[in-house]
Image 1 (cartoon, rainbow, N blue to C red):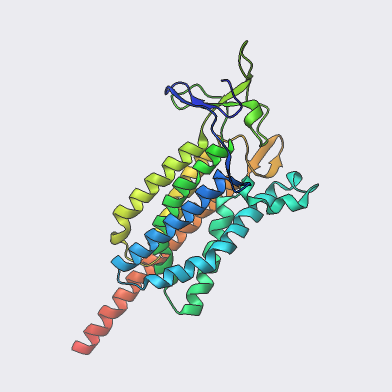
Image 2 (image 1 turned 30 degrees about the horizontal axis):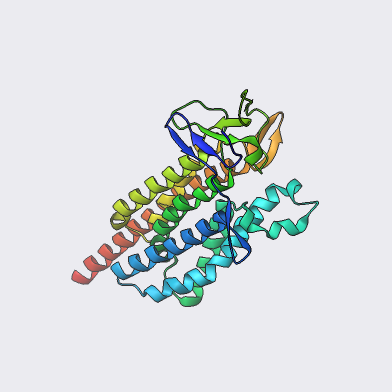
Length: 301
């Protein structure tokens, strides 16, 4: 590796030279991370509008939902990260506003975004379950794209690795804290580097898989909200596994010498809540069906 901006996947034979983190327009630096996140939001909005038209809903409703939700979701994603990474911000609190430098936690965005959508649905007198079902395939695909912002920022990677997907990053090109367990390799010629798990890639592929599954199963739902619950369960399951590989985890607490990653705890809660709400929703649907049957029998008598 000849430059701190190089990234390679040696076992795949892929080498990216002088890969930038930003570009300049009219003297102003623009982070590629920020462009990718913006593109992810745009794609999510386009897919939601398309899905709304297919299901004979008002696509303008989803433009309004997007405009109402995007800022709270970004704030939620940033605050989640800042709260659990406070040591990095306590001496320079202004840096918590520099979201273009990275540091958005998807769980914070999803939680605040869903709460905002719930309030939005109540104000507009629309089905909350239908709204989130319509939006969630776009969310999954947006996450798939958004994780590539981590690639350009040289972050969200795992531990030592020599598998097919092993990724090499020059140490001087990394701007985030990572575990001391990651081995630094210093060749006789060239730059010192780490060779790690590309967990950003794993999560991108996870979200792409979830997106496909949601598209295949969205018409089979019996209750509004089930598509979103399927996303919550599948993403929680995948994120729990991937989070265990990462070396830049946000830590909830430490038990003995074991750090408990907050995202693994939230992933478990997402799965549990998704299963409970799915079962409750199906039970209510069945009970409503039986009540309708009883009413029809009574009328016939």
